Length: 413
Image (tube, rainbow, N blue to C red; front, side):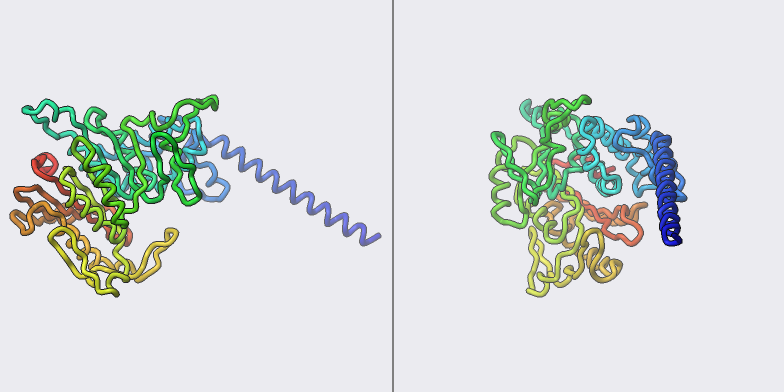
C-alpha cells in the first residue's frame, strides 16, 4: 500500500513538472510572437527573451528590415568613410529579400547576417573603387562603337557571389554587360543543360533557381531578375589549363573592357590573379584583397615566386596555420603580420603597370593607414592600408591597378 502511494506521488510530481514546462514554453512562444515585429537593441537577459529577435524571414516589413540593417552597421569599420557604398549595399540586401520573398528557405540560406555583414565590410573599398571607375569612364568621341561597349566584371573565387550580387544592384545597367562568378565549387553550366548538383557543388539556386510568387506558384528563373546578369563559371585557378581556358573563352572573346575583382584570395591564388591581369591586356581595372599566407610547403621546397617582372623567396612569406571551421589553427596571428606585409609588398611589385621601377611614388599616412602609388606610361597602381579588420585582424591591404588611359577621378579619390 505504501509503495503504491509512493509511486502515485512520483507520477503526480512528474506530471506537474511537465505542465510547468509546457506553460513556460507557451509563455516564451507568446512573447516571441508579440515581439517579432520589434527589434530590441538591448542584450537579452535570458535565453527565452533571445528568441524575440526579429524574424528576418519576413516577420518585418521591408522598411523595418532596412532600419534594422542600419542598426547593425552603425559602428562597422569604414561606415563613415564609405557611407554611400554602405547605404547602397543595405538597399541591395533589401532587394535580395524582395526577390526571394516567395522562397523563405532560400532567403534564410543566403542571408546569414554575420556572413553578409562581413562580406559588406571587407568588400566596401572594392565596391567604392568599381562604382567610381564605372561612373567616370569617359566615352571616346572619335569612335562611336566604343561608346556602346560595356564592362564585363570577373569575380575570382567568388563563393556564393555576394560581391557581384551587391554590384549588380548598384551599378548602371547601361555601362555593365555581365558578371562572371569564377569558383571551383560551382557545377558546370551551359545554355542547353544545367548539370545536376552534386554534394560537393555550391548551391546556385539564388542565381539559377526558379522564382516563386507569394502564392507558391513557380514563375521565371531568378537569373532574369538580376539587374545585371550573373553567370557562374567553374574554374580552378591553380590549374594552368583552366587559366588557358579562361584566356581562350573569356579574355579573347569579350568585346569590351574587363574588370577583375579578387577579394579574399588565399595563399598563392593572389599570384594567379595578378598573372591573369598581367597576361591579358583586355583587363582595364584590377582590385585585389589578399588573404591567407602561402603554406610552408613552398618554402620547404625552396620555391621562388615569380609574377610579372618580379620574383621573391617563398621562405620570406610562407607560414604554418590556417582557418578551420572559423577557428585559427597556427601560431598567434599577430606574429604573422610582418610576413603578411612582406607578402603584400611583393604582390604589389609584381603587377606590370606603374613600371618595373618607381617613376612616381608617394607614401603618406592617411586616416585609414599607409598608401603607396606608382604610375608610368602604361598605367597606375596603388597599395592601400584600409583598416577594416580589428580585434587582432591585420589583413587590411587592398591593391588597385588600372591600365592606360587612366581615370583620374579614381586615383584622386
